[in-house]
Image (cartoon, rainbow, N blue to C red; front, top):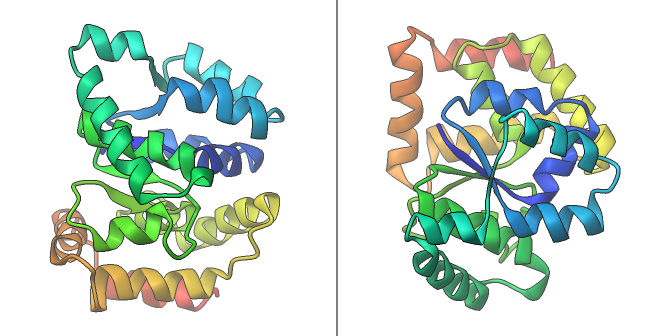
Length: 218
């Protein structure tokens, strides 16, 4: 899978020293738009920006610049997506607007953002007929577990590390309940349920058994 990163998700993963989760899970690429690096992170993520830059230099994160988009002849498409998304979201969601627009332009399947307020990009994308699937850090950790990359104790460890450093005050139990509702019981989009079933079935993994094991720890 390919992922476009929002500012807050970058900060949360890096503050907890859990950024490798992104690179391990999104094996087809992790991407950011240049203004997220040059403006959003400069303003809000000074304590992690050196580590982000090191991963950019190492090729772990690909930064899409305006010039690169022009060279690929998709800059106008990106601009159109930005203008459309700016009508949908508030001025405070500019980072999300760039991240969503980049995902739409380059065909990245997922947007990683921890902004789950009502009317914000995460909640809105769940309800739109859009090709971009929003995931929070908790969703990424749970998906990584369900596809067999980690065990339940690592889920708890990673969640607590990110949740504590980001001061989100989320509950792992409530995030698991929301995940099950979204991807298993009452999906906003039926294709998300089929997508999860396909990923786990191909690896011979029982979703029910995985959640049963996790529930014993939380």
